[in-house]
Image 1 (cartoon, rainbow, N blue to C red):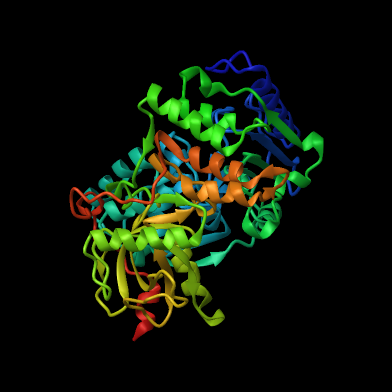
Image 2: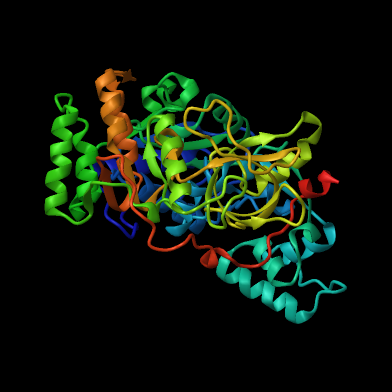
Amino acid sequence: MNDLPISFSDDQAVAYDSVADALRKAGIDMVSGAVTPPKDVGSGILALIGKAGSGKTLLLAELFKALREAGVEVISGDYESRKLRDKRTLAILAPTNKAASVLRLRGVPATTIHRILYTPVYDPEYERIAEWLTGNGERPQIDGISDQALDRAAAFYAGNNSIPGALAAAGLRGSDFITGWKRRDEALDIGFVDEASMLDNKQFDDLKEIFPNLVLFGDPAQLAPVQQSGHMVFDALADEQKLVLNRIHRQEADNPILDLAHALADPALEFSDFERMVRDKAQQDERVIWGERVEVDLMARSPVLVWRNATRIRLINAFRTVHGAPEDALLEGEPLICDGLELPLKHRKRRLDLEARGLIRGAQVVYLGEGRKPGFSRLHVIGAEDPQVSAASIVKIEKPDEEEPFIPFAARMGATFLHGAAVTIHKAQGSQWDTVQVFAPDLFAAARMGRVEAGQPLWKRLAYVAITRAQERLIWVVRARLSKPTHPLLVDDLRTAPAPALVLAREEG
């Protein structure tokens, strides 16, 4: 512990040492650097749990650094060398692209659970480049790939640690070097899972099959998955498997947003008391704003967080109206939320293609325009490592007081999307934005209903999750009003290389 570059609090030190001890028993000593070959069995499951600001992400990052220094290889999800099978490996996972991107911005090479469950199959010729870049092979000579192209690939990989990005820098397209995707059929080694409160039982079972050494990082105050009746996967673990962080470290930075979030733990606090606290904070600190209306300019990239579906639909239609969006088309720059895949079982490979590109349920997407074929869309997947895709799409625009959504265009099958200018707080879990707008009338409605989830008033859990999505600024919106846009929807900042077409695109013919 004395060699660590930071000073831990007592509860952090206990948690760190507990994980280190479990990994030592599994053959990895992070202090001495001694590492034994991987085994079929491991140390089992630990859960490191605590509320926002308790230092979970800091501990995850420090454990990652220590394992890397001990020689443990990190699996990114975009390429996995066959020569890693005799090495100790670590995969850092999150349930969504957005949650993984939050970790990557902090220097932690996270990927999604889907990208670990389903692995890419590389063309053997171009796999030689990947092996060379990862230090597992000699510099190759490949027809059609110049020395200058290989140099560009090496330079890109040195700065970004991405095999697909490096091969793209060499002038290759994804369809050149990735021939398909397959379900992982071999166990891995160590798995760190962030935002573990979002895991459902099926995902948890999948992870337990793959990782003999599994550490969950989660917030017990968040909302459990809808289908799990208020319970999170780590609730069922034995007490000795749970490492609880109680101290709130980021309070030292005098964060008014976290002050509000943790005030919700007071069992005597009523909704009216909490709103007075919000108003008081807004008068004291510019990071909290008492909003008399929804700011429409923010909705394209940072959705309004609501509880009720009816509220979500009304805000979405108001957003489209003020931007002059036609009923039969989408405007470039409109936000979308992936609502799943409409594909028959026989198209399993195409499903894997879509999911591997980041088009999983809950993924946030910005519409960039029509694709080359009817029903296709060019999309930017927020938080994905390779965000530009082109895919067969089914877009559903829900209307107030109408049971069936309006569909401006649709392919026969593909990724389905709802509009993303407003989302439910449940779907917002795992995401963070610089500025977050919370629609307070919905939380007031939840408070009046008196619903309880896992022993706590539902409105408090909703408020906690919504508030902690804000990284820099919280807008507590108290009226159902919408501002006018100050500029049209923007996409120029998202445009990079042309979007690679998915395999599904060729099915439509």
